[in-house]
Amino acid sequence: MLQRRVTLSILCLVMHSGWAFLAEAANAPRKEAGELSISLSDAVFIALRNNTSIRSAYIDRVAQQFDLRVAEDVFTPHVSINAQALRQRTAGTPKDSLSAAPEVTALTPLGTTFDFTWNGELTKSPGQRTRTSVGQFSFNQPLLKGAGIDVNMAPVRTARLTEQNNILNLQATVSQTIANVAIAYRSVMQAGKALGLAEEAEKRAATLLDNNKAMVAAGRMARLDLVQNEADLANQRLAILQAQQQVRTAELALLTLLNLNLQMRIHLKERLEAPAPNFSVDKLLSIAFARRQDYLIQSNTVEMSRLGVVVAENQRLWDLSLFGSATTGVDNGTKVQDRSIGLRLSGPLNDLHPEQTAVHASTGLKSAELQLEVIHQGIEQQVRTTIAAVQLGWRQLDVARKAKDLALSAVDIEKQKLAAGKSTVFQVQSLEMNYRNAQTQTLTAEISYLNSLTSLDLALGTTCDTWKIKVTGN
Image 1 (cartoon, helix red, strand yellow):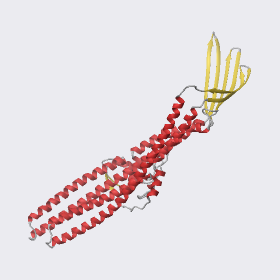
Image 2 (cartoon, rainbow, N blue to C red; image 1 turned 60 degrees about the vertical axis):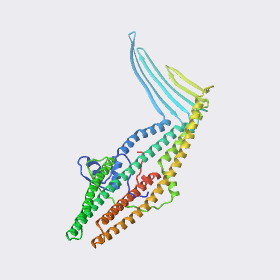
Image 3 (cartoon, rainbow, N blue to C red; image 1 turned 180 degrees about the horizontal axis):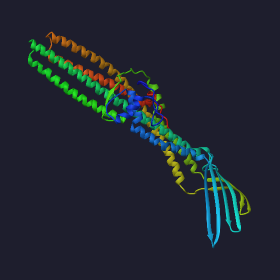
Image 4 (cartoon, rainbow, N blue to C red; image 1 turned 45 degrees about the vertical axis):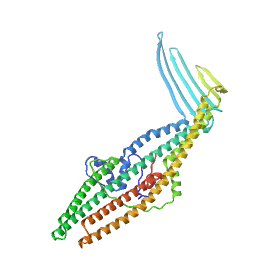
């Protein structure tokens, strides 16, 4: 929400795009190591294609979607058929028979079950031929236990809520991956800029040493004073080596997230841009409760628990059912016409298991509601804490920038005094050290502030919205 927006869309695990550069970056590097020049948006796109966590999540989606399909298929009429062809010989007499028995069963949201069966058989033996064709239709309508739309639709509604939670979990995985990539990208940026600062400091130390050597040659400075310059130059060269190691470590972490060749080197095209914070705490809290994946998942869990209570309470009732059947056809030449209808009542007299199930369902609902309250409180605390971190980070960045400018001015003034013989090498080196520290603090403040914006997006559940990424269940 607070970072630079790009337009991306996750429509499936393997996303197709016309961006030839990104396709090359995602696939070619495994064949040949080289240098990869990417922006932050490029890194996010590659991660969405290659990251193993996201790919694993989409693999799981195949089974999850099929589970929903099975649950929603419960009210679809199901057809089955049994058929047999038989040739046998009994006491030297051959006999051939052919039979078929298709069956259609259906369940309605009211709990009504319908069943239609047709039995057809043709038997042929020497001098005899018989034929049977009988159809039977039956129904069963629960009036207490198992009756009603709420009870019979509960499994379907639960499956749909589970599917919503699966998509929310996928969205959370994508959001966390994006945040990890952004932070890793900035770590590479921070290490690279720290290396640049170390190289600049080494150049300044070398220039100061050359100038002081000239002053020694002119008799304006003692040769012993050069020892401090030489030691400072050696320290700066050591700092460069340490910074190079930090750069490589950060690159490997980013390449691992992008699932690319670890032998590659990374060149960043992004520039540090830190926009000032401008938001309302109350508005962000309302956004968090509307978008946070864990809060929405728990809300769905509460609803599923309510459905479980409905089913459990219904299962405590006795089974009172209206049933009936009708049979018509011809059985071995005899016409068949049968009708029946009746009521059936059955129920336990001293079985505590149905009540036990209802008690567990009720306590499960209360626990789910309590957990929702805990998550609600945790989200509010996390959002307020993250907002405070963003606001404080912005103030720290502003102070660090001013301190860096003042430190640079102090170095320039002290160098002028040294050239006029009114200062010492030690004083200049001390101010140079202060300036390097100010540069490092400014860089750290910039990266920390940008990372706090990323953390705020995660706290609000708006990471995918910020990056214009649409996470679908397909």
